[in-house]
Amino acid sequence: MENKYRKDFPFFKAIDENNSKHNNGLIYFDTAATAQRPYLVLDAMSHFYATANANPLRGLYSLSERATFAYEDARSTVAKFINANDNSEIIFTRNTTESLNLIAYSYGVNNLKEGDEICISIMEHHSNIIPWQMVCGFTGAKLVYLECDKQTGEISDEEISKKITKKTKIVSCVHVSNVLGITNPIKKLSKAAHDVGAIMIVDGAQSSPHFKIDVQDLDADFFALSGHKLCGPMGIGALYGKKELLESMPPFLRGGEMIEYVTRETATWAEVPHKFEAGTVSAGDAVGMAAAMRYLNNVGFDKIQEHDLILTKRLMDGMKSIPHVKFVGSDDPSKRCGIVTFTIDGVHPHDIASLLSEEKIAIRAGHHCAQPLQQYLQINASARASLYFYNTEAEIDIFLDKLSQLRKWSGYKD
Ligand code: PMP
Image 1 (tube, helix red, strand yellow):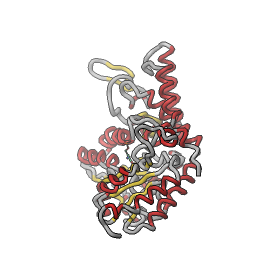
Image 2 (tube, protein in one colour):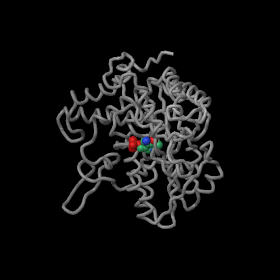
Image 3 (tube, helix red, strand yellow):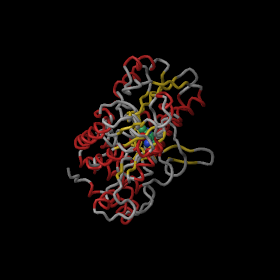
Image 4 (cartoon, protein in one colour):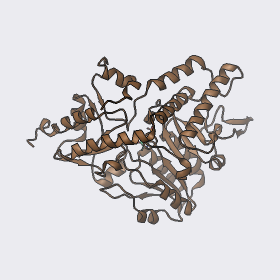
C-alpha cells in the first residue's frame, strides 16, 4: 500500500528516493520519542524568521506587530486543536515536562498542605511523577498511585474510587501511556476528581498526536502537550488551563513581559496567558507547532487512527507468531495507539535495539522514563516500536523478519 504522506516529510522523501546520505533506508519506529516533521512545518518557521522576525509583544513598529500576530495566531490554532474555550487558556511552554512543572510549582506548592494527597497513576512518565514528589516534599502532601492491571494495563473503577478520596487535591494522569499504549479513562478520573473537589491534570504528550483532543469534553483542568511529538519543532509545547484557575495562580517564572507594573520593591502581573510567559517567547517554534497541528487536522484524526490500527495489528499479529516475544501490556492492537512495547527472552532490550540498529531500524529500549511502572511490572527494561501514519506495511514486514532472527543472532538455536 502506497503511503501518500511520506513525500510531505523531507526525512522520508530522501529515504524513499534513495538519496539520503545519513538515513538511507532507515525504518523509523520511534515516533513516541519524537515524530518527524513535514516540509510545511519547516517552511512555516523559515517564513516567520524571513518575514516577521522581531521580538513579539514588545515593539510598536509593524514588523513586531507581525511577529505578535503570528505568535497569537499560533495560540489560537492550539486552542482550536484541543477545543479550549478561550485563547487565553493556552500557555506556550517548552514541552510537556515544563507544562507539568508549571502546575506543580505554581498551583501545587501554593495550594497543598500536610494531609492532602496527589493521585497519579503507576504508568506515569517521570515528568508526571518527579514534580509531584517535589510538591510533596515542600508541602507534606502524600503521593498516591493508581495501579493498573498488570496484563491489560487497565485502571479499574474500584481502584479509582479507592484511591481518589476526600484527601485528594490533585489527580494527574497520562492520557496515553508511552509504555503500555493504553488510553486511560480520563473522563471517569475527571469526574472522580471533581466529585471530591480536586483538580484534574492530563499528560497529553502521547494522546495529542493520535486522536482529536477535546479538553472541555474531558473536563480537564489542565492539559499538557509537546510540539515535537505531533510533527512540530522541539522546544515548544503548550499547557491548557481553565481560565479561572490560571487567574488564581501565581507566576511560574518571573522577568520581562509577564508584568503589569514594577517598582523597586514589588511587581504586579500581566493578564493570563502572558503572566506565565516570562522573557522572549519562542515565536518561531509556536508558529511551527501550529503548522504541525493544521497539518494533522488536514491528514485527519480518523485517518491517523485507522492507519495506526492497521499497522499495529499487522505488527502485533506478526510478533505473536515469533517465539519468545512477550508484550508489555495488552496484546490487543486496538488498545495500543501505535505503541508496542516488548521483551524477547534471553536478549537484553538494549541488544534488541542495537542489533536492529545495525539492520537500519530505529526503536527505543530502556526504561522509557517510567521506572516505577517497570518496578511494578517487575521488568528491568523493554524495547518499544512506535508507529505513526507515515510508516508502512512494508516497513512492518522488514521489522518482523529481522525480529524473528534476533535470538539466532544472539546465539540461541530456537
Ligand atoms: N509524558 C509522556 C507520556 C511522554 O511520553 C513524554 C515524552 N516521552 C513526556 C511526558 C515528556 O515529554 P517532553 O520530553 O516533550 O517534555
